[in-house]
Image (cartoon, rainbow, N blue to C red; front, side, top):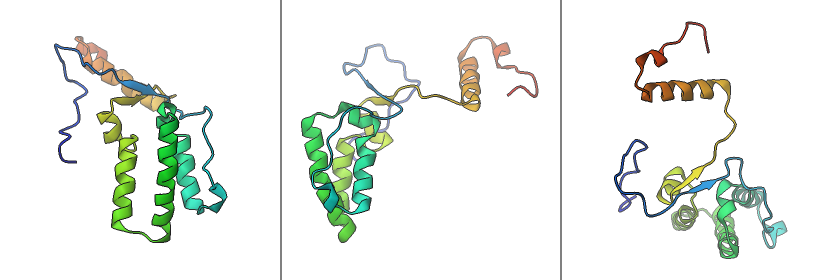
Amino acid sequence: MAGNGPPPSGNARRRNSDPVAGTVLPAEGYTGPSPDLPGGHDYDSRTLGWYETWRHSPQAATFLATDWQRLHMLAELVEKYWAEPSKELLSEIRLTEASMGGTPADRMRLRWSLGQAEVGKGAARAMERAAARRGDDPRKRLRAVGDE
């Protein structure tokens, strides 16, 4: 996307602190109250599924009344897109979803991150190995064969 620049490096070291604090979103998604889609019974099942995905997404934890209103207006465009797909409609949907943190790049731009989700044994071991690589002692990288 033109004008946004490269994504920030996870290993960057800055002498000055970032003036904008990041927001940590719930990794399991939003479980709080959210409005139903007005006139939901009139929508295609794909539009209803799209709305439910957004309704329970981690991003929904940040939504105010105006954001829900915008999502309701966008649902009408999504419905029109399913009825008659067009490049123009898809472009507007993509643009609006981007402003609401729809992709990983959008969330990085907004300085949103997901909280720690439950990880399996393989992911935990990968995190241990990554932590050992960052340490000063190379012996921390050693492991016995068969330990996983």
